[in-house]
Amino acid sequence: MGSTPCSGKGRGVGGFQELGCMPWKVSKQKGDVAGGGCPEADEGQKARIPLPAPRPPAIYHEKQRRELCALHALNNVFQDGAAFSRDALQDIYQRLSPSTLVTPHKKSMLGNGNYDVNVIMAALQTRGFEAVWWDKRRDVCSIALPNVTGFILNVPSNLRWGPLRLPLKRQHWIGVREVGGVYYNLDSKLRSPHVIGTADELRKFLRHQLRGKNCELLLVVPEEVEAHQTWRSDNV
Image 1 (spheres, rainbow, N blue to C red):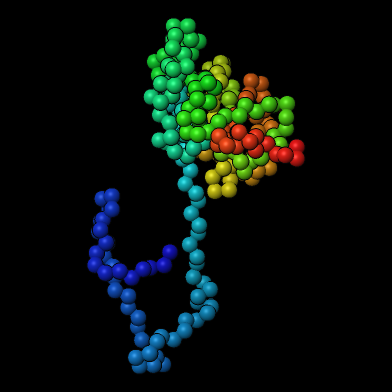
Image 2: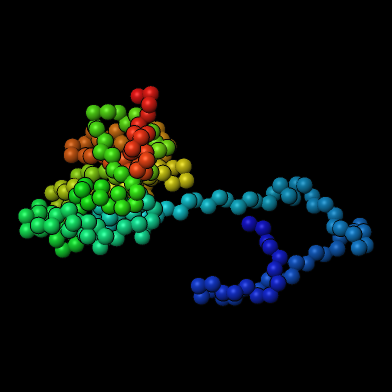
């Protein structure tokens, strides 16, 4: 970025030391016209000045806590840590399952997570979105990607006890979406977002996941997209 002339001292932000603006000095070169402008810079020297590299897009990636993978998947798809909260999902769960004594999701009684697809679908509706349950008999090439906000996959995942991996599997929600023209796997169990790549590479990724046992795919789309079924390509 170029320097912008300013006057006085800059105010400190976030505890940083105050910075003053140094006056811009131009030394006169031989051949300068008195009172006139400065000589043109050497073109070769101009070409050697490196341009600043473009900054990568900021990606929100919520990490795993307790059994709140449904919460993490939702917030990662919306790229907003305040999109949904544990309390909001727990309220939805209690509304959908008023008789908690017979619910199979015992963990949710304490607000520890392990929320099912009904909670995810109801949560999306509070934001004006719908979840489309993908029919695995269809190929993912029929998904109209520009009309889909993100994806939530339900996949088997190994259980861990600290650093130990147990010989047990449990279903796990993960979020996938596009940021800055690139698709990312935003699984909350990953240390950082994993690059999937282009639209074609996303389709390969989804095909691979759906070939696995007990894997399901939800398309997260705005209400109007679901109403007009524009999440699918017309030519397929």
